[in-house]
Image 1 (cartoon, each protein chain N blue to C red):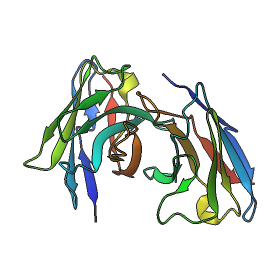
Image 2 (image 1 turned 45 degrees about the vertical axis):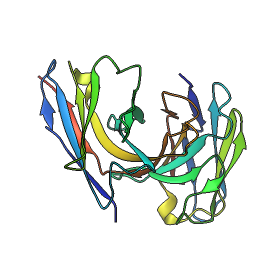
Image 3 (image 1 turned 90 degrees about the horizontal axis):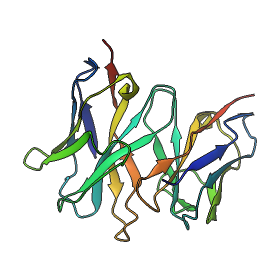
Length: 124
Length: 107
């Protein structure tokens, strides 16, 4: 049974760097069948895709966040991480890690499994 | 970016009702559209992919249709568990984008 669990800082001050780790169990982030990624949701608002990666090393970011975002991978721990620099109050949100289905057609944005999310609040 | 627009934003309905939610894309996305359900305090769950394919384990009361720029999600007989917020998402081209959501509430 796949499980994904986010762990994050909870509270950050403006200009700091957000760092969240997703730990995957019951499945491998090196699987050829899936991408893995991050989506966020400001409380009471809609969903925003942040970025995704494939085990081969390909990484894709939302252009709206690309200058501040890095997704890194630790296959030995079956974990991947999100770093978002220079945060502001606008980055306050629930951050989800997720699995995306590899359709082998370059249409790899289908999210078929979501973590429960970790709330990150940016406040001075 | 492809903009996804859902209507209505809120829908009031009763158990047993048939409801339809519409999602429009700002440009053609072929059939690369998914629908998700999000219950309060929970993560979204995949219902429909490729516009009309039902995800495994999802009740057959859910169905999707459409292609190009206009899509619909239909629930044929609303059940108590179905009162939730529904999101469409295009995965035709980066960046993947979502509609703003449709909240289905008790009438």
